[in-house]
Length: 192
Length: 199
Image (spheres, rainbow over the protein chains, first blue to last red):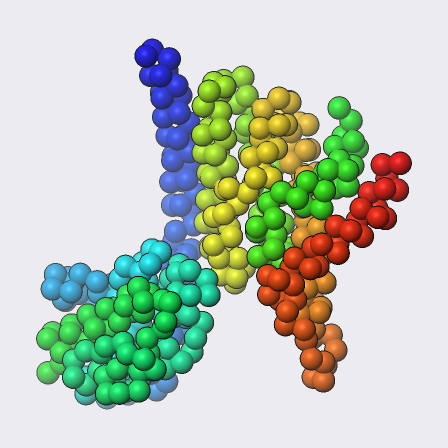
């Protein structure tokens, strides 16, 4: 009994030190990683809205109000070209097969999808990772969503249907959920 | 123990990949390009050397009954550190190595060195053993990556070698090609290098 407690304490001590060291390294690298992810997001924004030259980031209570109804929303950026509204870019984070999937959803002012891009994911290589690796997947979202949501089905040819990746249902659904949350957030809180 | 013996063991006599055949899972997966091979080698050398040092320092205090969980915690800590630094400062490499960075934790090469060497030897020789074994791993992995990239993609370190008309053999980028090249490499290594050195 005593020995068990002693062994447990030794292990606790070792893991506690390891945790402390990692927390230190994390606080060192986290800002660099966040900065880079921000730059990637910016580059992706320009891929979707090529004409955008004004980026208005939602902050504080504006963002918090929308997040209270749509908790998967991470950030919202309004995009303009010389003052003319282009639409919104909404980043969502939803649960995938292995960890979270962060998706950037570009929505035109008329409520259709301008384009999507999966920014961060750790899905299985060769299966779930096709949400990034297969360009046809992201392309199948463009122009859809006028009805307020999209559903995955086959090759995604029909109205408001997007490509279903066989063997990667959970990953597909994670992206679709993120997109649909973004569409709902747009139609209920942002469209006027 | 002589340092030169350690290096001779790590790189030739007990080469972790070509002789002991340990840690093969990640070897097969990441050797599709030379760049990935170099990145993985650097990560393995760093983790192996650092974990050997720490485990050697702690060897008098680690209770024998729970030594394996403690080794794993130490190794996992260094792997996570390497992962964080790679994500921050070497993003393209981090992306292409993907899941195989966290899998270094369960690479039997590192646990094997902790168990059979670092937990029984002093700090300096343990560090040298880590570097030597890591170099042995690197030599094998980079050789494998070179052959596979040249045959499978027609390039070396991303630079195209043969021009447009060359039709690469895509089998060599796939895991099946990794097995074939690894098998040939082990055969050649045993026939020429290992025999000459050990005799």
